[in-house]
Image 1 (cartoon, rainbow, N blue to C red):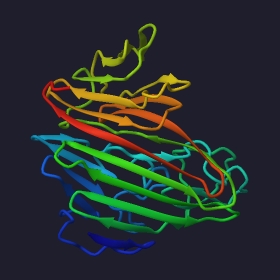
Image 2 (cartoon, rainbow, N blue to C red):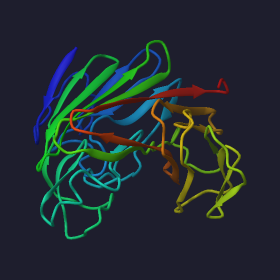
Image 3 (tube, rainbow, N blue to C red):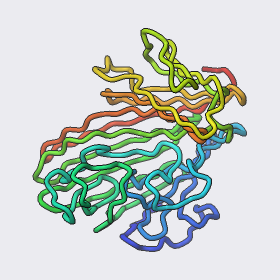
Image 4 (cartoon, rainbow, N blue to C red):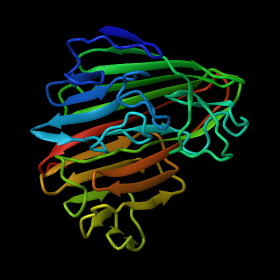
Length: 324
């Protein structure tokens, strides 16, 4: 096991496990799949935006000659709010800790990022450009097939948390698991949401008619999406190439019976697919897509009084041919 302490604005020294890249990253391998994971760094990290959790941005997963995931944007700006790839996660899309009570210029907390400054706008914008007052420090441990990120963060006015995220490859299987542990170490109640954007592209085939996205629930009647696609039964199918268009639809909202935190994205052209299943009930499932990514987004609610903690995880299975 190797251990790193990643401090604010600290340069990560090169290590044998890091692939050749301008951004620090770690490669995991269990003999079935290989995963390239970017490491958080306030000065040199691949992602330095203020929207998504900096830990565990997955660049790609390789399995049986197929590539899963790729950057959303072909031209990379590490400070752009959505300059990510793979299962990128965001806490508090609409109500970050301390934002409502803060005045312009005062601080609020974004889990997985750090302490940010509120601007003049009274409403939070997830795609907004917020100044980072203090980025969180990360403690990182890893083995050959797993990596764990820990952030113990204290904000202002009683807001604080301890966050642990582990990515591990399942022994002998083409699967990875993302585990989370969030503890309220402050004096105020945390009441936020969390979702995984799941930026998915397979074998660099643009998302469109070659794909099928399936959910564990059905729609009562077919729903058109921008005259480009349909949500029918339990699946979204695209009629024509998206080109520069995007899709957005809320496919579920309500009380999860216990198995709605799941989806499958299949590339029919290359016969490869990725399926995820989470163990936390969802409050909502959104689907968003552009040519560079198909994104099933499961939302969960997090409510923690001081001293309380929440634990949840998601399992990703990578599939080739029709064995699912």
